[in-house]
Length: 288
Image 1 (cartoon, rainbow, N blue to C red):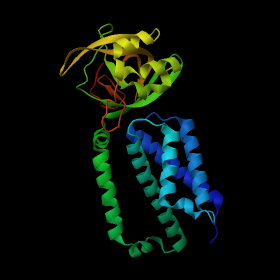
Image 2 (image 1 turned 180 degrees about the vertical axis):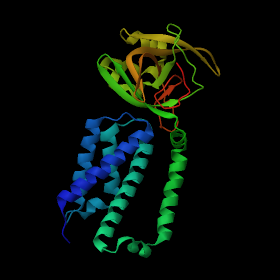
Image 3 (image 1 turned 90 degrees about the horizontal axis):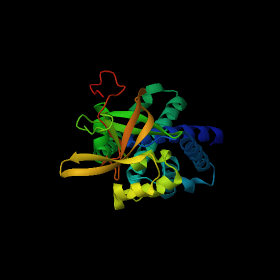
Image 4 (image 1 turned 30 degrees about the vertical axis):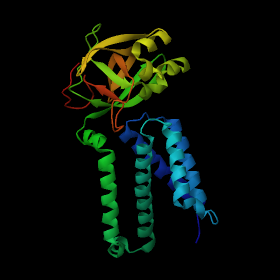
């Protein structure tokens, strides 16, 4: 059988790049183009090696799992819910790989859609049902919000740095800044990692353990404490800063106060922030 290494490389690049992109969007992770591109190129190289004679051992389950973990780590870093991200990427990669193989068989056979009559549909529906079950259990929260149109893309800028993350449009999130009277975006500090200097990242890494007040003492200017109340919390303090520019789904909303949560705001990893203000979606009922 003739193996076209360049074609194998290109197809695997496209499949892995698309799977990583969808994984990042569904997991609410910031998408960094350079890291995604590097991971896609590495995935294409791995796929091409698997297609070479004598290298078939790389296509077995354990090497492929290790390679998938490496691609997810390269694209997103070792963040919270890493196993969820790996599982989602693995399922998407299998689905896209199967679609590519099926498309190739259709083109090679010359029979058109008639070749589908020879498929074992029991295996097809069993595999589809298992994937649906896994996705429903592991990603049920993120999927529900995505279907309801409650997820939006948020871009924040601070000190010449820029971070992109997924936010949940939450009408119950009514936190406002007492100084400006405007809604506050609440985000997990790790979701805004591109905004931090090395010193700030080190200080914020102790936020959950030491609390906002202690963390503020180790940070430089630009941070302050924001009082808040919640169920079970009569009076708490959140570390916050002002983003110089913010955009929600492409709509620029100007400067916005950002409160830093010491822990993830999403139990399923589908988003990294909560927003109760205006957004760029058509018909959005939120108002600042």
